Amino acid sequence: LHIFGSWRDSNLYKMTDDAADDNGVDIHFEKVTGHSDHGMQGQEKISYELNFRLKTGNVLSDQSQSKALLDWRDENEQGFGNAREIPLKHQANTNFTHVEYDLGSYESRQWRIRHSDPVPFAMGRVTERVEVLSA
Image (cartoon, rainbow, N blue to C red; front, side):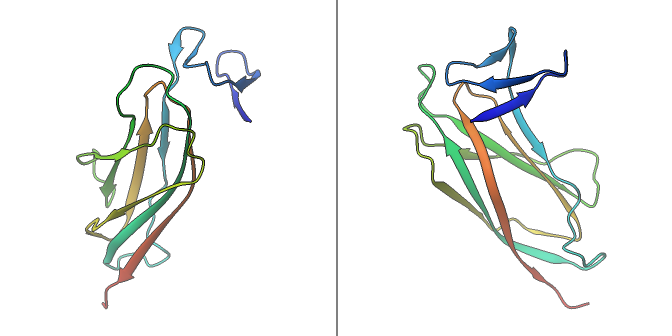
């Protein structure tokens, strides 16, 4: 069961499998994190992998492949970098895990994940494996 609030009228609504818009406006998922430094401000970190737990549903249209987009910015840069595509499975896979490897180094990083295809999509826990470099 997915419940969301409308910014237009402050009411709560139930998301159904056949809903891809909110009163004619497409529903898009975007999650932007805070700037993460793993509690070690000013120290360089290497990001080895990012593990996602995703939930997808059945295709609502004739899309051949649904995908999510992952990008990030380091040290509070102005814009986000080039996006990596995360291919999603269609057939109601409720226990889908995806791993992205070799994500570079940073002192602090802000992550963004987006999804806009007309396919049910939910994101669960995300974990990162990092190494803090010696000062």
